[in-house]
Amino acid sequence: MEGYIHCQSCGMPLDHPDLLGTEKDGSKSTIYCLYCYRDGEFSRPEMTIEEMQTHVREQLEQTHATKATIEKAQRRLPHLLRWQGVPAIHHCADWH
Image 1 (cartoon, rainbow, N blue to C red):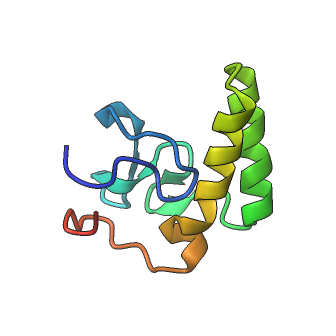
Image 2 (cartoon, rainbow, N blue to C red; image 1 turned 30 degrees about the vertical axis):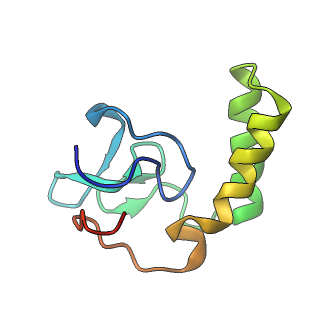
C-alpha cells in the first residue's frame, strides 16, 4: 500500500486498506482515514486542532492506551498535513 503510514488528520495508523478514506470518485485516499475523510471531504471540516486533540485523547483512553502514548499522539497532530494547512494531494505516493 502506497501513501502515508498515518492519517494526516488524526494520526491513526493506515495499516489496512479498509481504513483509508475515499475521494469523490470513490478511489481510496492515500493520506486520510475513513473516519476523517469521505467522498473527497473532511467529515468534520470545522474541527479545530484542539478539538482533534481532545477526540484523539478520548479515543485512545477507550483503548486503555498509556498516558505517554496519548500525549505522543496529541503532540504529533500539529505536524500532520491537515493542521499545517498543506493542500491535500490525495494520490501522491511520493509525499512520505
